[in-house]
Amino acid sequence: MSKGIFNKILWIDLSNDTIEEKELTDEIIRQYIGGYGLAARLIYDNMPAKADPLGPEAILGFFPGLLTGTGAPFSGRFMVAGKSPLTGGWGDANCGGYFGPEIKKCGYDVILIKGVASNPKYITIIDGQKQINDASDLWGLDCVQTEDILKEKHGRGQIASIGQSGENLSLISGIVNDKGRIAARSGFGAVMGSKKLKAIMLKGNQKITLTDRDKLLNLTKEYNKSLEWNGVFLGLKTYGTTIATKLFSIAGDTPIKNWGGSVPEDFSIENLDKISGTEILKYKQKTYGCSSCPIQCGAICKIPEIGIEETHRPEYETAGAFGTMLLNDDLMSLFTINDLCNRAGIDTISTGGTVAFAIECYENGILSKDDTGGLELTWGNSSAIVDLVKKMIKREGIGDLLADGSKIASEKIGKGCEKFAIHAGGQELGMHKPTYSENRGAAYAFDPTPGRHTSAKLEVGSRMPIIKPNKLFEGFQLPRKIKVWGEERNEAKKLVIAQYQVTCSLGLCEFLYYFPKYPLVGLINAATGWGITIEEIIKTGLRIQTLRQAFSLREGVDIINIKLPKRAAGVDYLGDYRGTLEKLGWNTQNAYPLKETLTDLNLDFVIKDLY
Ligand code: SF4
Image (cartoon, rainbow, N blue to C red; front, side, top):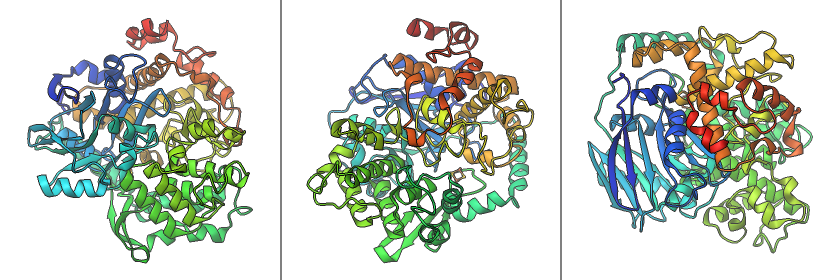
């Protein structure tokens, strides 16, 4: 048995009220690492093709990264994974806080849930005791109330729960931990809601055995020390991601007015100043961050003006989705909406994108005041925006129409409004424009979880302070000519995709990409004793991406024909992708992995499903 892992899956079947442990071999973990890599293999194997994502056969998995819980820098993340009810294909959502490490403390590498309960339930795994409990009195409560009640009842522990949006099967709902961290993307709040599972509470007492704890500690200390005077480190530590709101908007990266506007023409510098990181910082009460993170980029805020005693600081993505995208400079409305969404468990990116869609429909006479239940949905009308979010959470009136995202709403409304729905494959795009960063369009359209703000991309053309890929991890070499379209750039994109799959699956935060020389190989080997090499890491990353792709193809998603809306498309994103396909060993016409590629990556079991 390798060190750093428990070789155990906890399987919970809510239809039969059963909980059982199953063995997970070293071989599978080494081939898929952990996190969404391991998720891809276990869910591919155990979930029947074309199963209803909201039905009993659907599997909902909670996966800490391989390094989660070891103390390695940036390693506190975990992933929720399964079939996305929003896109119909592979889905994963990445989240921080303390829930991920607690899965390990309970002695598991994975928690998998299937079946549908007959009435609301919550699961407890407390000091080795596992139970499925009645949750009738929790159903209808928000995630903060749910955490408070469960802690009062069971004592200290880590909780992941759904709010009203997940209960109402909103396809843009997520799963919340730490009273406001949310595994938001892919619609897993609805999957949990469909299973009538309100919450999972964990409290473990197991320790992870490491191959060389001293080495892991030394590498961690050395790396963390190297960050201390880094400007980006200090900026993130102080302002969190809101440091980017003004900077990226001025630079042209952040979408304005539902992707159709610009700064300063539609949203002035004065508007931006009102919702900037500096303004938000005035409300900070204390620092908050994920487990084992040297930055701690989060904050807990108090907002006396609107009677909020304690709430998470809004992130850049939220300030974009409800600020610049809606031409809304009312900071109090941003705090209110952020708190509402965190409590209800609904994705702020998709919700903001859908509100932007609704406003544009209203401004163009496609939706009327009668349709909106009296709301005047004009750009920047913050009180109407807040009221609309409340309606979406409750699925009330027009909120019901919008609660499954802009694509589904646009199909129901018709009248040519599809052009206002800015999504990829059904999921609203993150708050970064492909017109600003060249490879972003291909990443939005063609990653197996489309529309994600966090996905592998080669940052070319952008002026973000991203570290040059060659300096990120020791021993990792990219070709030199990455600015010019062609052979070398395509090879670089393949390598970046591979590398990204592995860092995610290790449980690492994407922000490590801002800093040089993360001791990737050393940390994995200090934890596991595997003797892994960069070559194996690259092959593993390719295996993970290929299997995520195969899952979506098996579900019938026509990935290569996913189209980005014109105003968000940027460079020739399909052309950008075709060269990558060749390097990945996938068919350049339909994005199916070639048979020989599947064999080379030990994915032969996929061949019968795709050919
Ligand atoms: S940088 Fe922020 S999001 Fe990333 S691990 Fe640290 S606290 Fe979490």
